[in-house]
Length: 186
Image (cartoon, rainbow, N blue to C red; front, top):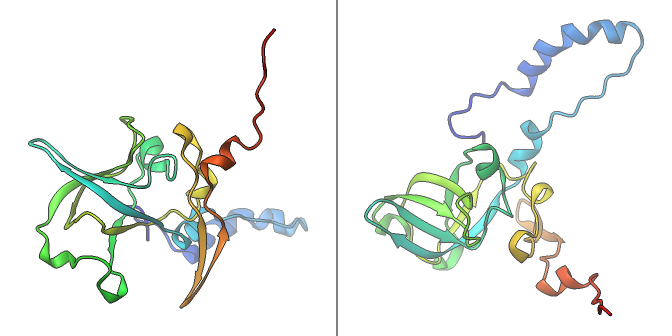
């Protein structure tokens, strides 16, 4: 899943364009190591977030979610536009999206900063409790996350078909203060 309105060449196209320029180094016996970055890793991860509050206003509609800019900073920092996809969970755990009128929403966090948004101007059918998947988070989600505003970082879960396993536990507020010590002056 590429960013919105992004036309990214395939790995093969990229390699075909790059290899002739690197041939000189290979001819000299040099080993070339190449890290393709988000072209592979970004699509390997999504940020799941829950709609906590819907705040429609006269000028703009806000969907306040439980994730924030500390979980995925790229939209705020670089203007990256990841896709936002509604998740349909089994057993009717999430309201059917087809029964809710679609509106244009800004998807925002609870950090209360102007830059605390994950997506802007997205046409979605939303209800409180809905789960949204924000794509392209594999390369930069947890790696760029922070504890800004004393927010614990989310857990990481590895998924392989129907199997899944937590690979990094969700932080707790207590974890954030565990290494701190008090100091009495004078």
